[in-house]
Amino acid sequence: MTGKTVQEALAVVGLELDALLAAAGSVLDGGHPYLVGSLAAGLGNAGSDVDIHHFRPETAAPAPPYLMFVDGVTVDVEYYPAEIAARTVAGYAGLTSVAVADGRIALATPPARTVEHQLTRWLTALPLRDGSPPLVTGDDRAAVVALLARAAYDTLVQLAAVAALAGGRAGAGYLWHRCGRQALEVACRIAGDLATGDKWLPRRALRTLGGPSVAGAGFRTGDEQAVRELLAVLRLPLGDPLAMTVVQRCDRAREVAIGRTRHLLTRHGRLFREYPAAEGRVATVAAEIGAGTLLHALRTGQMTMRADPSACAEVLR
Amino acid sequence: MSEETGNDLTWVLTHGAGAAWQYAMAVQSTAQDVEAAYDDEDWAVCVESCATVLRAVVYCDQVAGGYVGPPTDLERHLELAFAGGDAAEALHALPVPADATRDDADTARGLIAGPVAALWSRLPIEIPVVRSATGYFPTVRIGRDIERLRAEHGLPPLDWNQWEF
Image (cartoon, rainbow over all chains, first blue to last red; front, top):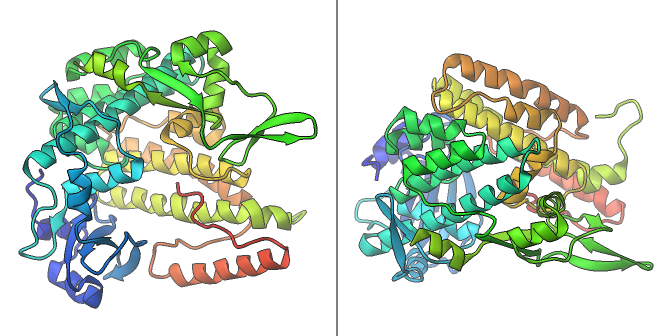
């Protein structure tokens, strides 16, 4: 995507490929090691870590990162089974997608966040050794890009829903601001510009979305009107977010009895004596229990929200 | 740190150590990103890294209060929208990153200084920057000492990965 060579990517942190391979020694023996993350995506700066995913036949399951320091640069090496990238990507081949802006968004439930991050890294990976093939190519690449765009779109829909619920509350401006940023994220992904985390979004928006006017607008949104105007510029459809989202009790929260009183214990280790039981479409639940109660339940892990696949498909088609 | 009254040992072993750990993992390491971007004259990334620092400060405060596990993105943003406090307020006051200038980067660095220092003053122990050549081994020792105190206190080993900012 960026056209950078692995040597050029490593030069950002002042490392030479030969020096890295020599310092890593047996850690990078065998298999196929790839530079991943911000440097591989044509981003990064002198303080960036070097992230390496090493695909090896002898690795049965993904292993925790191995931390090294090479000439003062932090290097993370993660071992993966040799075929895991191909297997993971194959699971998403053939997904239906629809044309949005100049790309496509999948009509599918997005993968778990860890898988989303892995796929993002694998699509931008640069091989450290000659002869290592690209990890994802051709139609598979297009399918995964559409899937990653969908993951970002679902987040946009959820952020728009809580921003709308916030109404005139003090936090609403921040939530609409996050919607603007997320719209830029969706547009970057549709265009195939992929990276994880917030840090590089300004640079990605500037290089991919037509310069400072769009990027600047995306980072200045503070209300619904500004977000709607940005979405129009980016050609991203968004209906009524309160009709496109559903909520339910968090499946990792459970009721516990203390004496005669029942409490809700969340996965964050918090106990609540009062907690809502409603579930369903956000517009309906908010009318039933009140927007403030719903926002609090979502903030504290009592309830979870997701974008409704059929409602999103209707808007995206 | 509360040097006047001392820190409650149970709190240190159950919540305080985790907050200090997250301070090293999420706040300090990202503060290094702020300086790296500044040295690179990459003002947008500098401002963005300041935002990450402030989000991490808010999370460390949650951990110090007994919050378990990482929040989802939605939970995180709702917390930042409604929690109040100096770090969240500083986050909302950050300059726009997309066309940030050196002045904007200076403003952003100024905004993180207070909340970071205030958080630091509330932490019970000091953990060096973990992801550095000089910080790694001292951290291993601190972890071992915390585990020894937990065992003496009748507590099981700590899941140091439970927070993950």
